[in-house]
Length: 88
Image 1 (cartoon, rainbow, N blue to C red):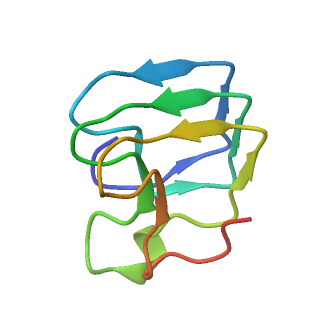
Image 2 (cartoon, rainbow, N blue to C red; image 1 turned 90 degrees about the vertical axis):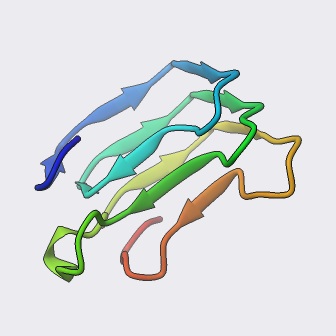
């Protein structure tokens, strides 16, 4: 999504599968991530994080509901980064 914030997205009813990394929701804010199926990535699953050291660009205030996260590696299936805030 590049440097900057993406807001008010509806990410719904998708099937993310069979890659090296899962959905990377860089600097996504005020968005809804629901009813998705996410699975089987060789490196890691879904991440909400910020691309820079600027905390104003972090992911925040996202609603994550009714998703199916599947994994087969030792890495995460869902990871809100510690520099982000307000993910529910």
